[in-house]
Image (cartoon, rainbow, N blue to C red; front, side, top):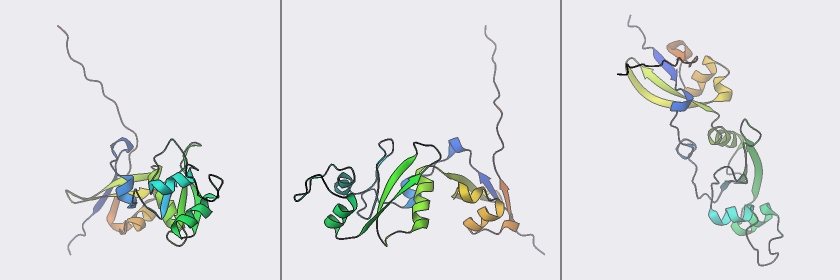
Length: 178
């Protein structure tokens, strides 16, 4: 009987992660249905004209600058809008999310939050000697353990060896001085 191929799931050290928020989440930086904005310490995403509305830097012909953001977005786009706030791990980690009602759901907003604030771990998926893929796993899933991580990635936990970093050692090199 042939032995099943083992898969090694190896966590990439945080300082070596290379994921891209835009690529992983598939967000259009000029979206007219999803806007990320509000915290000047973070990059905004979305249609520039609509972002002006969210920052009250837009003048409506009827009411000037005295408008409800959600009502003004609806007036300009003809679509009903909702708003929520996503958060990272620190007090200053927040950003408002404006979205067209029905165009997104809680899971999508949670995914955006995870990637936007770096609440993910990157893993190399290795079969035999070959790295076959790199995948990102949100912290709230990875912290549940190997089974939850494998289920998220569509892998059989019985075929996977999962390795996470457990610290590192710093070694000084010396040379002789003449």
